[in-house]
Image (cartoon, rainbow, N blue to C red; front, side, top):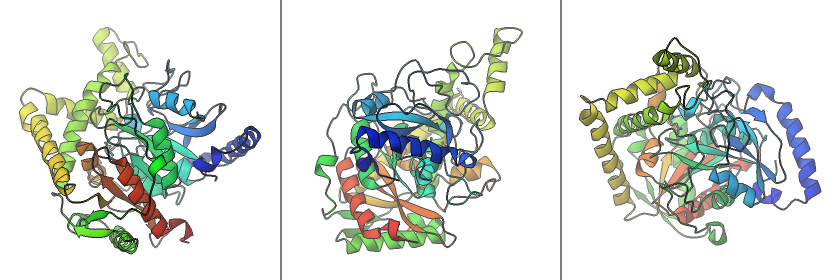
Length: 449
Ligand code: GLN
């Protein structure tokens, strides 16, 4: 597959031919179920879009039954920015319902397969975007990351996935899951493409009140030769599988070989991240999803009175994982429990943020696992808690609002990709991309069998 950088240089005619080939390739792999729909590719370089980002006149459903039939009345800001730079949205990629999940199994449209092993999940919630890029069915894609949903599927499918600093990329037109954590970001074949797409979609937007209103760009200054100070976390990675630990050792060595200084640091036990995240995310999700009641939004199921209409609409329209989170979110916000759970979680969130800030006083980047293991097999989690625990290495980055990038490092014995992530201080995407480029170059994943 050609890269985004190459695609941007194609002539009109070459691009037309490329698009026809791409369509044929996608049609030849229906079993992957990476795309919900392949739509008109428009004029520009085609970029795949997660089903929770609004594209005018498209049916956008966040992978949910309740939004069947909804047609987006406007473009998300990221879509406007893409179109202004010669890119065009072309296909809706599969996802966990309302981005809640780590496997893409909770989609109304059925599961997506991992292109590297069809009995394994592609990760989630942006599993469709990751599988599309990983299988050579997209040049690049957009995903959204609330607690790892760009980075974890990227790691599972052997591609690059980047979560920007909170506020860097406008959330206008993104189907909200947990508004204080959500960010849209690029999912690409390599680090440079991620930087190109990041530059295109990031920047000021008056339509998002949490937007950082910063317009600096990374690509003009990309420099893989900068020597950086990078923290490794020997104790924090203890819960990872042997495969992941081996990849971590390999990446650490590669960073040393590339001339970076490695220092050992520690983060607090990741079990606190899980608790703080699942309280915060479900509380916000409960509030955000209240609008899907069949009156304001959502496919209406008429009941015998208004209350019954709400109940029927939500009972039939929402899946089990979403209902579980709405219950949990209502619980942690309810009057007897608000202080014990929600307020406590906000305090822990602060501690996590402070902890990162302390580390970044003395280092430029942190090297971390993305997931504790390679992509799991379908049905491997016997209960939701096991799935939640698999988010240990991604969610603290969202709680602290930091930028991070996952990139492929090595493969397990059975050929599954293993990705790791670099994390930078808030708004320091430049150093993040510089370090990632250097690591990518030194590792040379593409040359590994
Ligand atoms: N797996 C996490 C969750 O289920 C993160 C999902 C996401 O980033 N959208 O909440």
